[in-house]
Length: 281
Image (cartoon, rainbow, N blue to C red; front, side, top):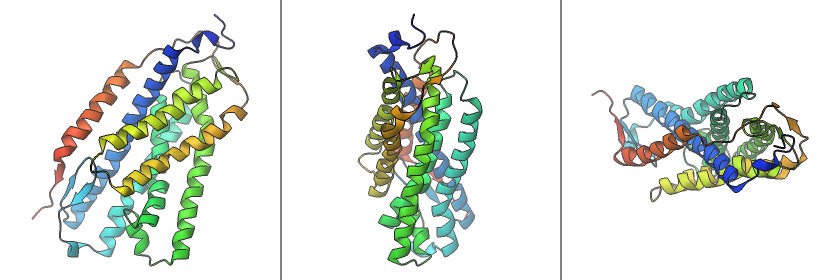
């Protein structure tokens, strides 16, 4: 076995395994972050005596349009992005503390952080442009087009900066599969573990939300692909990363794979009928 370059590991089978492991945790992270924001918002809406239903494509408020107030709009449409960002930062800290572990599950925390950035800055960008979601909050500040442009550029810039800084952490997670990440296996790992799961995972979540997916959320999901841009442009510029010297086996994380499938099915079927939150009369 060539432990230096891990040449015997760059096979179609191992590529598929690495891809499925990352994709599984991508889906789990997506559903977790999405439901966290939706559930928190639905519970917060009860404080205003707003009843709501969480569907797979949208959180719908079963109230009269005249029941909205300035405070309720600002809280309910900003809560999910803010909570997502806070949760993502916590999960990034967790990942940084455990990144040298060999466990596959650590990528879950990194995907959660990625989607925290997407559900916050991405939502702010999409909402400001489309006047939806958190864009309603921006509208209540009565900003001119120049102000909205600044917010949009700020959101896009933050996504690019954060995704660029996060690239190194994604590459560090290669220690679960290789003894080192070098010029021989870097492209193999990057496409299997990061770029392809990001692309395929986004496509899967879009398909799961059809035919009711909103343009606002579609925009946010597509903005998530921005995370792949710095990775694609910079992954080859990093030096060799040396990890543990003992042989590392590449194997499918069956638990994550089946949990991802079950969550996808449950997400689509259960939320097709909706989860109701009814305010007290």
